[in-house]
Amino acid sequence: MAEGPLSAGAALWWIIGAALVAWGVCSACSPRLPGVLAIPRWFAGSWLGRVLALCAWGGAGWHLFCQRP
Amino acid sequence: MVLVGLAAAGAFAWWEGGLDQSTTAAHIGVLAAIGVAFAAAVVAGRGRQRQPSLAWVRGPWSLRRHLAEDRTGTLGAGVWVSLTLAVIGWDLNSFAHQSRALPTLSGIFGHLTASHGGRAATVALWLALGALIALGWRRAR
Image 1 (tube, each protein chain N blue to C red):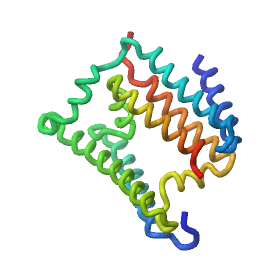
Image 2: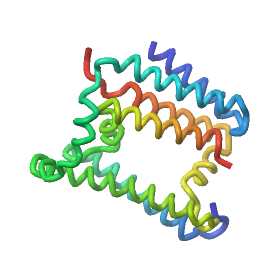
Image 3: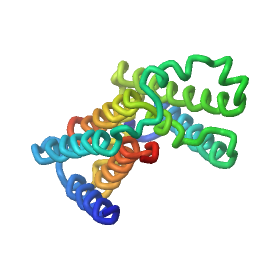
Image 4: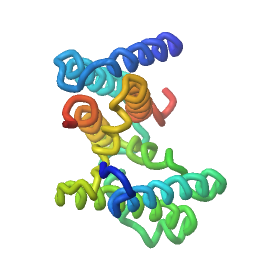
C-alpha cells in the first residue's frame, strides 16, 4: 500500500468498502432485501455452486496464507 | 461435538497465524483445511442438496420472472452483484498496473496478516466462511 497521503487507488478501496458496509446495513434492516449471507446461500443451492464456492474459498486461502509476497 | 470443532478451529487458526507463509507447515495446514472442508461437504451433503445443478445454473437468467415475483429482492441482488463486480474489477485494474498508488486487495490483506493476531483472526474468518459453504443450508434428512 502507498505510504503517506492516501493514494487514489486506496481512496477508491475505501469508497467500495464503505458502499459494501452501507449496503450490508441497509439489507440487514430490511427483510425484503437480500442480506450479505444471501451470496454464500445462493452458491450453496446446488452441488455445482457449492463446489465452485469451495474452490474460490480454497484458492483465496492458499493465496492469502501461503503465496502473498 | 460443535464445541470440540470450534476449539480445534480456534487452535488451528492460532497455530497457522504464527507461521510464515513460505513455510512447509503453513502450506500443509492450509491444504489440510481445504481437504477437510471438501470432505465435510461431501459427507454432510449426500442427498441433502436443495436443487439440481442444472436448475441452479438456469435460475438467475429468467430476470423478467424474478422482477415480476420480487422486484425489491431482485434489485437488491443486483446491487450485491454490482458491488462484487466493482471489487473484482478494481482489483484486476490495480494488479495489472502494478503501481504503489494502486494497492491490490491481497496487498491490503497483507497488512492485516502481518502480525500473529491479525493472521490468526483472518484464518479464523476464512475457516468460518469455509464451514458455512461446506455445511450450511442443507435440506433436512
